[in-house]
Length: 206
Image 1 (spheres, rainbow, N blue to C red):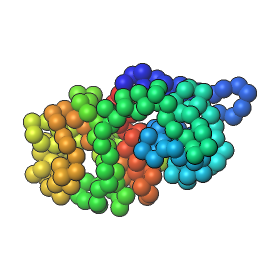
Image 2: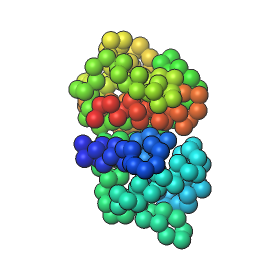
Image 3: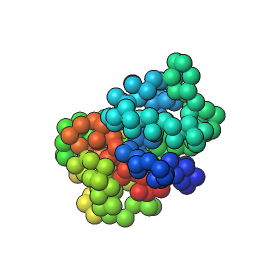
Image 4: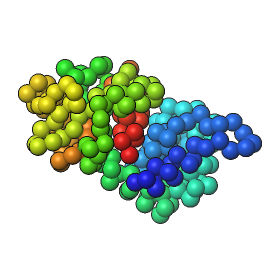
């Protein structure tokens, strides 16, 4: 996964001449996801789905093409073999992403939970994840670890099933959890910001 992180972050480096990119690594991930699931996909649709301007989308696509991850044709953009490999590697760590209703543990009406496989031992207090989510435009993030067949929230709850049954039921119905998995919930004013917040929080663990 380090290679994936390195490759994706490499795409954001400033290149002379020209301005530094006005998109984040999470826009890059989302672009790969949309291309994987909906490709071939046109630039206009990509721009709308990513929530960034046409110019930024063009720059992002050019960098993905230069990196050999995306190819363009008349119908739109598709993943190359290398792009598919990177996307599959990414998915092996972040296999599921679901919407959650407002509950005892979430801050807003827009909440997205991301599952991160096997990174429970990397979580300290959850504050680093919360801060990363806020930097990405979310209101905050809640980090939970699946241990001994239950979810725990570091420093707050040793048993989320008992203390916050509503959110526990929502999560366990939608996500397939295994020992040492992490669930990060991004909460924001829009679905897009909630998703980018959750991804930003999960990214800190890798």
